[in-house]
Length: 344
Image (tube, rainbow, N blue to C red; front, side):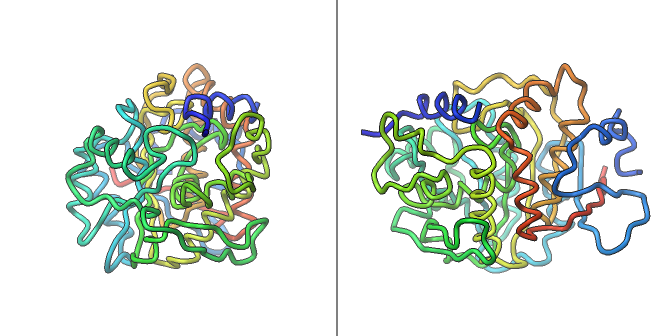
């Protein structure tokens, strides 16, 4: 008998006790306070070596989402997976369906991809997952539940802990991947950005997600078993390993988009129980560099006024979520310098 999604979320929380920015008020001041761990913003300054480009718009709509994507889509070809967190039933914070529909229509031969969950809830079996997809309105294009027909082990080069990770088997059917992420908090990860979207979201529900969570038993977690899960630094490093498996597989044929809207402290896996966001919407980021885009999103959260950012920052820091960035840097998953480029 598995643990419920609500119990999982509660338990996870208890366990894990330049020009581009001229209109973004207070950002330069808060950069001095923001925890620059994985990557450093260098917009407008001279720097040695290459920098990652992170494109940004304050406008959260389909036209601007497509405009950002078109800035860096030259490596996307063939059959394209759009990795999206489709959420629990009636989740109030998931990305707007109309915006995603317009984007998906813009990308030729594209399919939304997901995997089943480890916890017992609306999406732990393919049958329940498909019902939830229907309820949440993800009916305008094919949705591939990648672990529906089994799994595949993907290797992790120079891993911190996990030398291979079990993924939804259909992942190998795609030539390219677009990681379309709702950036928000997370009960165990502190925040859920592009890394979380692929690290947990591509791992299959029966094996891979248990590997990432550090739960080594082959059976569903029960009772006190949940205390055996990895938390804080180890969990962040496992996520980095898992994310790297997907990045290693797709090589240059993967891009990342973070949508910073309705940023609850809770993940979309919390469904209707997710806390109401306290922080105002920021915009959309896009990059070919996973480290740079997640760092830029964190920097923008820290740039917000204290009364807005307090809860989300507390969630990030109490779970050691910023260690995600450090772990990605150690694994050389991205550039340690980024330039923010506004398209507005």
